[in-house]
Image (tube, rainbow, N blue to C red; front, side, top):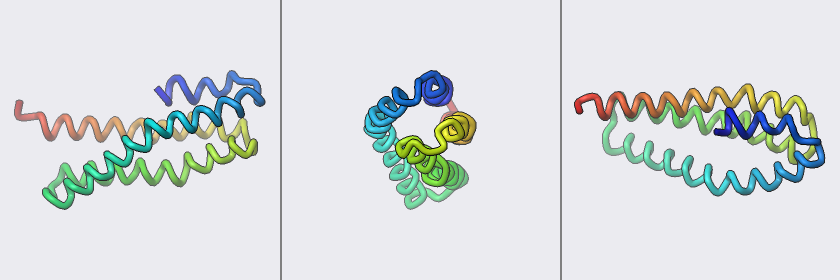
Length: 120
């Protein structure tokens, strides 16, 4: 949804409207994303501690990749928008770089589905 709807929609706002919406958006999306990402991190940590195997290592590395990309790429880009700096470039980078998180989360799903449910 973020990749195909939300970030592309940023290009259609007039800048002043974008800044107003971005402030609202970041607060609202944080209520959804922060608990999910924390849950994913906690789950991965528990799995690594209780059952160290190919699945837990692979999924934990993918989760780490999501966290790393979030804080190294996306937080600074959203900060740029909040500060009204490099607006057009930041929007382009959000749309482009979010494919990385989309791929990582998709891989987490695929690995989980395949390795945990292949015997059914």
